[in-house]
Image 1: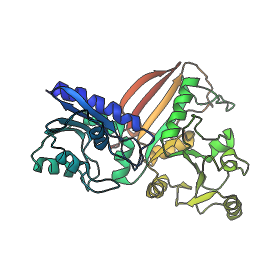
Image 2: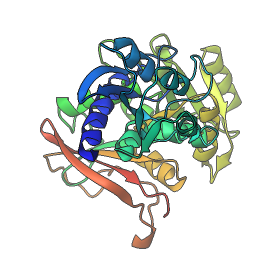
Image 3: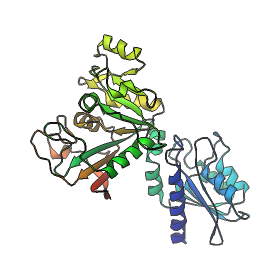
Image 4: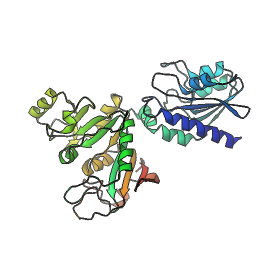
Length: 367
């Protein structure tokens, strides 16, 4: 029976992924209803504030669902939010068996939906493709538990590890397919964060150029407000909002000029003369920012790793060699002294994106 369970759960996960970018801050969830070896209904959480996956699956059912098995990628909710609890709906519909991938990560409700279903005499199986479900909702899983954003550090480099030439030219190391993929990522994450040096050097727009995509909130880390007033991220505030994370060391006059221009300044404590990134994450998390794409520049990348705020790493590698002892690499700063202090990366996976290779993995948190 287990192979069947895996097969139907895989379908439910594929459905769940269709909600990407539209359901935040809710998780992506998919549901499939099976009776006598036939799929009789399927649905997913399509949009924040609208029907949950289970409700949409019931709505699509082609026959009576009594006695059927429901496959759902996340534990059915047991509390009243914007919609009534899905666990009650499952009981009401006289479902015979429920197969769940991952339990709700929210410690306040985890396991509650399962208990409710079992109390009603429904057979419950948990943990089928649980890891896949957690990975699908990695942003939600971190934010709901820690109240801090999930941070993805992204870098693009040559085969010999350079992010620019010795003169600082960096556009474009990777090909169009990789750049397109990054714009898609910008469109689904809440915010994009860079250091002020990146703004000074490249004057990027930091927007998502995906038709119909949404622009992330732009966060510039600038402890002493060195940002040029004519920077693109400051000029265009209609399509994307910019916040500057700064410290008490900032020039008051410059701060006043920026605020007059409608730019929000977030003052956080300084740590070793730089913006305290851990404190910044707490502030941003409280504001409901659940995810950040760190396109930081070498210095900010190292500071972020040191501060322990990076969850996931994505490195695009281009099939070209650049050379140059002074040409920058993705992670700069002071660096570590001993190999034993290196930041470990788990579950490293490689995939081809156009002519480039994407390596992605998760920062080991027990370092």
